[in-house]
Length: 192
Image (cartoon, rainbow, N blue to C red; front, side, top):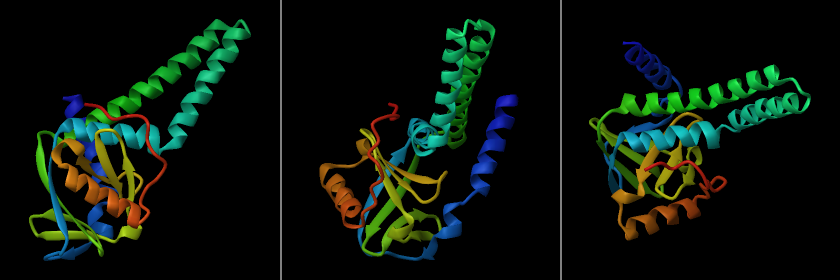
């Protein structure tokens, strides 16, 4: 019961944040190339890990500081404090993993999503037509298994590489290069 409540609270918080519908324009059609993907909960888990441990540098910084305190107290021959700070560090990391898991559970089973790439921006297909994001509002991050297109700190669109062919990968990379969407390359956090 607690897990369901926690998932609903987290999902509502994410939904009420900078949602794509707030910054995107509604359009009926688009001209460009379309990519259709099947998103599984593992894709959402990878996105959440990427946001928490790669996109949000403060999380890494806090964990490193806590771990340094643990090491400092261990060398200062204060094992109780060292264990306390080590425990806080472990709790911090486990809490972030729980948040990532809760986000992936909230999205549940596989969903099909259509994306459109055009000179005007990135389009997301939904039941009412298309949501259009201008390229200046989008940042891209590529991992070994995914393309993540961020439209806010906590919001991103996921394109798993397993769902697209080589021509579509080249097209996506061409848009990333043309509109300079790349952030720092990610070397970590792509599960599956």
